[in-house]
View 1 (cartoon, rainbow over the protein chains, first blue to last red):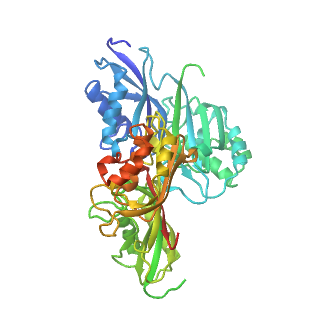
View 2: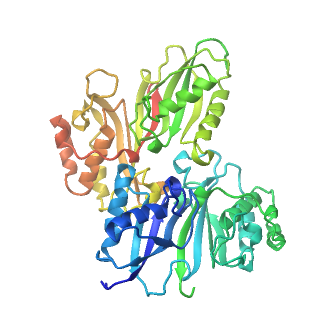
View 3: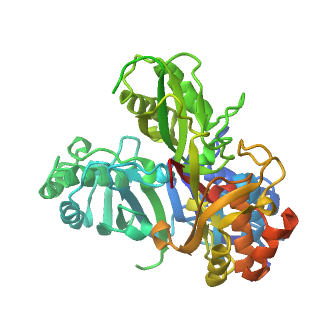
Length: 267
Length: 267
């Protein structure tokens, strides 16, 4: 790896969002960006900042968040994750950190974690059993009432396309850095039983060019409403066409949501 | 159910130990007993206390901890779990509590959660994959080095019996309320792959009349040492016979341990 000046590094980051007030740095709050910048400032350069691909909310998790880190560092690139993870582990109970750098790569000068991103995949876990599992309470949405999975699958299949998805956007802006457009391209959406994720677990997976503020959580809440018979799969096209948030379902809670992967380059 | 005076109630309790400084009430600390007594004092009678079957350590979980609650309460017995769980949920992030009363039963006057107990079953989860899963970091012991499961199974099979298990006892007393005896009857001990608990998970299960302080965690640490080839399954009888803590393995961390069930009556 090069040791030249002005490196542009792409970090791939995993975190359990439970103990964080979201991704974005905020004074007096423990955030993922804040924790990473704290340790990277020790290792790389004082007061260093990173740019994340997605500003995940409090309680939301990530397997594959990304961020860019720019600067002229004497520490060899490949040492950064090991050293940072050791510092992060020291802050965790029993020495196990709730955020970890999984990977690092040197990128061209014009690469940017957010602006170069061509898409993202999110996972949402719903546990559908009558009694709660408190061990997983921060890692999935627990729905005790029986859900009609085939109705939810039918609804999910109607989601992809390039459309204005404003009906699935929470008040608070599009949060995408793309100005005011609420058009997004959803590549795929599906839901299936996933016992490998835990007993009674349903796994929803959605990929797209980008997502509006709370879009995945509102889509999941709408699917849960459909699974409970409060809405029909056939309502999906009319909900999208309405451009009206009040026509969609409830907002599913943050703890079931995982930013799984950020895509770069052609899909 | 009776509404007479001086009820003696057996609570069955589930908790995620991550956010607690253990079971036992301690001033200025958030403990499971303290949380339960706080809400039960609102519902049943001021300054009520409960007696737990086991004083689990910080970070240790329970599916089936038990405790007795005595007194003359106007609230109907069957309402107590519902009302208590609602109060407990209010304290949890997203309204999902980390402790919950699973069941309640009226017991004879001479019944006591600890003294009437005839045995306990503990579960210990070990995740054996090269990369950590930070989402499960508070719920299992993550061992990245490959473990020889058949050696661990051979060792586990040598554990049961009625013996002096002092070699597996941490300094700090026997913690069993049985005076100074360190003899216990271990009914069964086994370890197996348990993918249903999560990818790469090993599940150790042990039942016995009672357990010495940190006994299950020291046994698990010894099995992990055996799985890594640092000790042999054939060492188990000599470790037990030595009555010497330094002959056993390391103490496995608390977050993999679950108090699964407390037994009453003949096994």
